[in-house]
Image: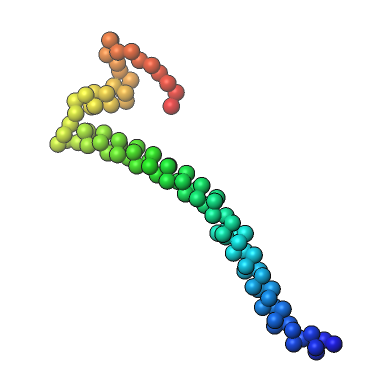
Length: 98
């Protein structure tokens, strides 16, 4: 009886492998059914990237104004007052916790 079943063993093993890989192709982390989750993650990361690009452009513009070749007196004064904690007598100072 085992000799008779032994001839079906490679076929059964192959069928099991096909089922195993087919199952994980649909339900795995990168499977077809998880594409909506990947799309949502991609949309969130794209929005985060856009926000970071905007922040970087702002920082680059501010850094450009602090270079020796194009020094902005207003920005320099603002940064100096902020770092040293000084204020003009006519300025309103609103302290916030970082």
